[in-house]
Length: 290
Ligand code: R5P
Image (cartoon, rainbow, N blue to C red; front, side):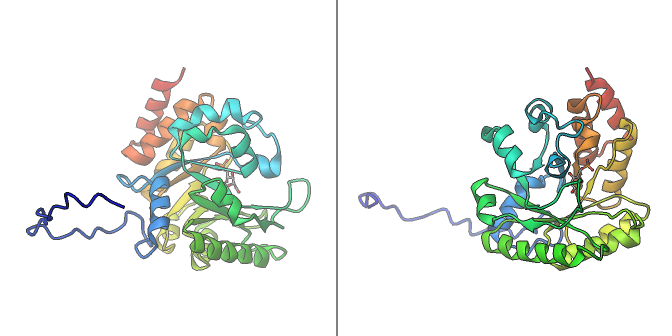
């Protein structure tokens, strides 16, 4: 019971200051619930509306591929420079210090490996995402793959239901089959299907005409880095994506396979958050490089 001895009448009602009603800093998210917005705000910086996510979920289908052989040695030193960490639950629990307090985008589907047919995935138990305090759940969609398209879209809409019940945003990740043409038509279609089926964030690849992909996707898009490029080219990729309307990057190999991953993630951050040109970003990389 509160102490009732000294209940003072309120005086400061700010009668000359109407309450502000600010729009949310991410497109398509204005009508989401408070918990969703709070989690999205941990991932996408409210001051820039952008994010640098660090993807290291590669091992969940590929095993100890280059750069993620030892997550404790290769990834943990990068954690402080990332806005969000994207990984699978086993590696997060075993290698990422819970004290890092970085938002987690949890890889939330699993089922196959590169040794068999990819994308026959099922979704993890959402309670495990809650236990790990996930700020988002990521799930793969194989748009255009006759064998797994329907299954992976069903996975997304089920996860979107669970995410919406618990206030956890869902990120749809567009997997690209070998036979797909990597153009704006394909990525526009795949991204839009993710959003229409409930994804709150879409992860896709940069391509020519990318501004059309972002324009017709009603929720924020982040781009994957893809295969390792020379650092200046990877920074140019990030720059073009942001310039064409992306809300950030979710990069893996172009960061952790860089000759200096700590310098690289900071240079990417400069491009994404501070508006550095690719040349300025590369200069930053070279300045920070050990
Ligand atoms: C794809 O399903 C995963 O999310 C990958 O981890 C991601 O696309 C990899 O990032 P990157 O292509 O930048 O290595």
